[in-house]
Length: 290
Image (cartoon, rainbow, N blue to C red; front, side):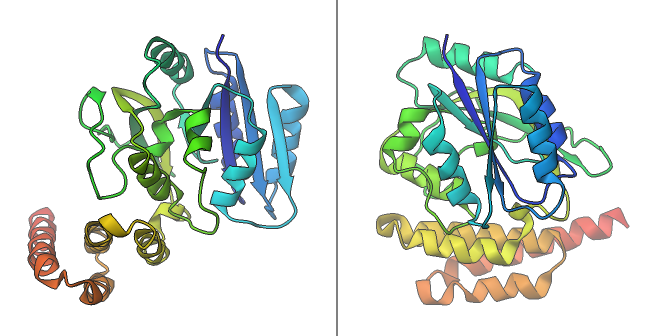
């Protein structure tokens, strides 16, 4: 029976982490270890984690005294993981009950696949669920020829542990850890398969790290420098993505700020029509809603 290591990095999410833990220990597949890396939280996270660890021997708490960031925290978990496969999930997200069982079955039957991704649904602070499935668009082999960075949702994926170790784990000191990891998978020609079914519930609230746009763009520019042959496309894509997020949240000054990020990279001519098109569409739909 294949063992699965599930690594949960946590920093001050004591409000949510008990739900995440419950969704993992109640999985239909039982041969798991849950490694929770608490990154020097100052809320009640430590107490919640240790209480669960006392009642379930599959839970391995790793309590850090000094904050080291999400990438380094994930690497701490990887180093002590003993599973054949590994999943990473945020301490405010939830797993669908049969997720691990389905993914293990697939990977055991398809030994050439390094990564198996799936779909997620967003839900919000008030428990409202966004009904649209997010993720790669179709079943089958994911053609990782994209130079945009992410081609699948990391929170939905199961990886061979040896694959993660082979690509060098995560890069310490950056917050866009999934972006970096997927580029490393591309660099090493890893085989990625997508299962077009729901396996994760992703919580959205005002403290989500993926909503910290200004920090995100700086990290993506840093990562782009690590992959020089894809640098221009990576920068173009990351700046465009951040612009679209700002437009949708009506932060128009920041939208144009990140347009000017494109100046050193010679991509202004590409960015401007994209920017104008998205801005006009957003204003039009806002007008229709009124």
